Length: 251
Image (cartoon, rainbow, N blue to C red):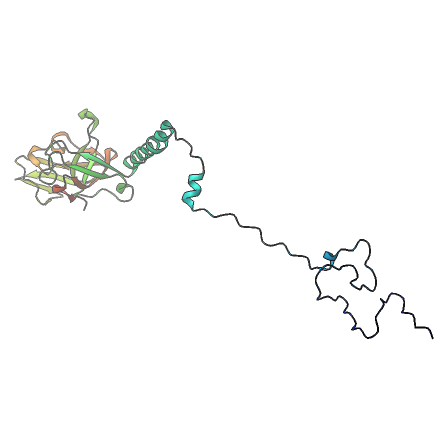
């Protein structure tokens, strides 16, 4: 009796021998000759085709350098001395000077007092600051210490500093060492009394009557007349130098 023939594609098995295991998905290694494939793989098949593709990992990060090292790594540009002089010195000084000039022309301006006509309130060579804006917001009051350009007929260019005694419409008179405004004594603390007299006068419209606090030593309205209001520069606010004379003058 003849032996049954194996089915097509099955390898020969020896009776009584343990069946060999076929390669499965958990078996790794290259198939070798006689490994027992049931059906040979296609010609273009590779064992690597069944392996999972490896995902690309993150690209290596660039090394981080401290700001100091990074700055050192960059080439330094040479600074031109002329460019440095213009940018860091000349231009800032020019801007500061321009701001100071605008401030003096519109807000406040310093003055040095060359005489003692305002003693004891303001001493010789004291430095004061005049407010140039105040009379844009309020009228001139009696008792204000003002800075003004002298009347044109005096032919002087240096501004004067005096105290307002009479405003337009007031009557002013000086007798017995007293200054009378509208018939009443006008008292200024610390002002020195006068040794002269002046008949009663009425202050014209648009004019002011001014006196120095050092009455006998002051070149003021009792000698040359009235001051046009348009000549007023501003009100003296403070004696700022020397520091030992520091005081506020505004009312």
